[in-house]
Image (tube, rainbow, N blue to C red):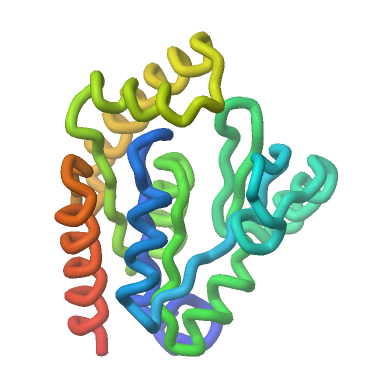
Length: 199
């Protein structure tokens, strides 16, 4: 990685993780509006699109067969199975954007973040945390997309993800999304700080 040609430029890769319903997608969208040099890495997924999601914009929707082939070929920087679906990041797309001087933001789950930490030690990992369990439940229920049993599974998964992230020591920062504006400002500050340190 020393020559910076084939792998991510130090400080140009930012991972933003957090449990389902924590608001990380909203934070990332706001961050992209405020940091012009930042681009979002579009994840691959085997799950079906939700209403309003666009292929190539929100996710790249691929078949299980295509995903499996890419994983076997080493084309994925990270991948994980979440709630029965697989998600992954294409290494070539990330490295190309980083080589062009972009700040590449990956909005991925904790499993994926820990894989990134191993494969790209220079990445900055930011964990988005809910204020408390009650608020996370309220947000999940408010989305109106999941049955009660699915919400319970998501809450259990959230506890597991938060514990895993904190115990790993790989996440550089934790931002509590209690007030959205405050959380966005903090994430923007961390990204700009990281970028300044490596310019």
